[in-house]
Image (cartoon, rainbow over all chains, first blue to last red):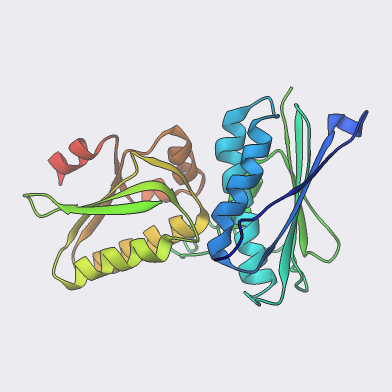
Length: 153
Length: 111
């Protein structure tokens, strides 16, 4: 039986933006593991972040999307490649990074999934949802790492 | 995360989603509904009363099922969406594609 996913957690004193806890985990490119990874991260954040609802819904959906994209498009479900999750968080902010081992993509040119000609497509809404559910989205220059930021005062 | 399927006396197949409808389980929902469609059922209601969240692949599966069912002269409706889930449908403008009722009872009455 496969062992449960586990995270490495460290705490820092006087961290910038109050991001005093760091959580890291790595999972293989298996879509069946997405829910377990999201549960694991959300449990840690719910205990710390000021707005639990934001974790239960916005963060869960955004992280699910980012992991699915990383596994499906980034690593093309190659079992030899992994996905790294790194979360820096405190009571008022969460920085959530998801990095795959693929060649990256051009995140600037994605069709709007809400147009009449794209609305009936069965895919293409993941990054659109992420952008609408978190406060800020950043990519690295390669396009294989996304950072999603949530903030609440 | 589980799906339960029942058939109402008026012929509507009701599929309840308990937990999440996401990339890891969407194929199971799709297969359950396609099996019923191939068996001759045409009216489908997906009940989200006990659903925590839906991701984009879950939304995508609902879109593709809706197309398949309409092609066969049937209808796929949704019910029981909480405020968060309604927001997902509104953001993606999929609220214009589906008949959405507040509760399963209301949806069944209008089918």
